[in-house]
Length: 563
Image (cartoon, rainbow, N blue to C red; front, top):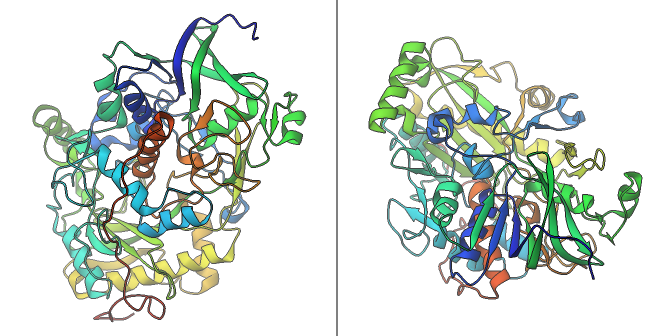
């Protein structure tokens, strides 16, 4: 029997109120049959910088809302350490991210199943994507219109550059997709974002706040979870710090970690669950030797290919103080205008080489040439794509720096360790140049700004990528789902070898999906909740697209213009 004197008791204790945790809290509490406590280290999301879509880069860089993590120095990036923003606020990273909604392609989830995540194939996960979504364009076999998470296109591509980019992708031989979150990811089309009536639709808005009035749901903010309380190899509660005091909460049924790809493995290790030697090095008693905890860390990198624009129609013309004031006032009082968009309103998904059945490269198109935070804007006018080779083979780790729960974890991604990752990016840059060279861009295309016309060889491109590549903030895989000796959780999200403990967040992904991670992480929360409750939605029968001739061809048609 435990001698712990608990301050409170609940059926379920969830650590983290982010993309997965908020969905879990909503689903586990909605019947009224179960009591739920959510522990969130951050505070309220009531900030204009969170709510206004165009301001998303501001909270991403504020200590109040961001954990402030940084990677170790990365050899593949010339020794640079990258900021790894994670949301420290209700809604977690869904409250500070770029608002992009990308589910991934069918092949991503087929790959999960092949790697041991039985029951997580495309047909199995599609109903959970649908259940949580309220798509403004209506529901169908692929999209939901009854959920809480509103998805739309922001300003509906009013700037002609967005449609020109889509047309250029078609002219380059890649085709058009009506809905990359539906039947067909491959191709070029509109971008979806999580915006409701001009306001960011985070999981705090979509899931948590509608549930916070329930008597059986209790949310504790400013609560730093320090460890899972164990009785032998059974999780029985959670210890946390709040307001200078230490508290304990008992979990009558289960403890669920939804604390991110960084903090979920950190909490397992602080609780004595992880690689035995690493735990001993940090003076932590080994409760359960689980070598895969913290391993398999990977992420999406991206580079920006920038072009001068010959017409004065880009976002670069809206960077002055008066223009920003106008955008802010128009949004604040009318909920319209440029403030309602993240400005990534069109996108594309292509294959980097023949022999791939599904896309592995993603484009976000921006009608401006500028950094996320509004700095480093080009002189005059320009546009850019954010290019990501999204199926990296390089792997890193998350480790403890000490047994102090307040210390950030150490994280090493090992970016560009595998030659295949560089090859995919090189191909992506060359395909981008070809897309920008198509007739649809003729009215707008000026000189190439970045990488620049003199950067052409493999070595030159590799050097440029190592100097300029940035994280897309999509860490995954550190509590990998599967059944082999390096898997951390089983296909029901239960930690191997431990009772009453689950991990439900992006850390359980066997491999990262081809796209941004908010949507699949929310899906993991939706599906994880049903695993906990012992139920499931029936699988979908909706088909998915893959290009004819994918074995032999990189794209479906010939470009109108080659470079």
